[in-house]
Amino acid sequence: GENILNQGDFGEKLYIIAEGHVFLERAIDLGTRKGTAIITILGRGKALGCWSTLLGETHTLGSSAICRKPTKIIIIKGPALREMMLDNYQLGFKILERLCFILRNRIRGAYGAMENI
Image 1 (cartoon, rainbow, N blue to C red):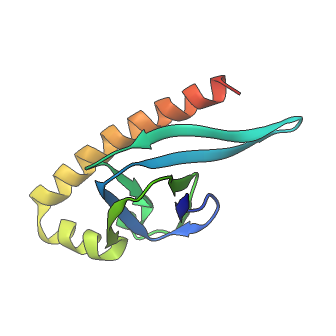
Image 2: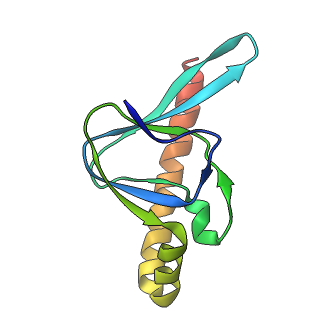
Image 3: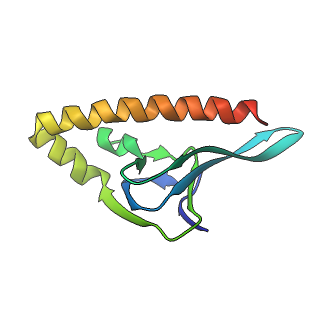
């Protein structure tokens, strides 16, 4: 598959899946136990990427995003989206509301993945 994002890289863009699926995977090193855990599989309409760009901050990516089959993705630069959110507070609120749900689901997925190691 093709990597869209790599764990440990600096992120500055957001991605929306228009078609296909993306696997979010995290490399885990627990000393004697090492491996890769699938956190979640995202499909059409789902978002991924570096949300900290909305805050004007840089951030190291906590997981890799991999396409295992042909996938179409919309790429949005974080600073441009931040400007749109500041210009339109209703849009900004909707995006932040959606972000809260995404973060909740990712945290649950990460905990579940760690239990399977």
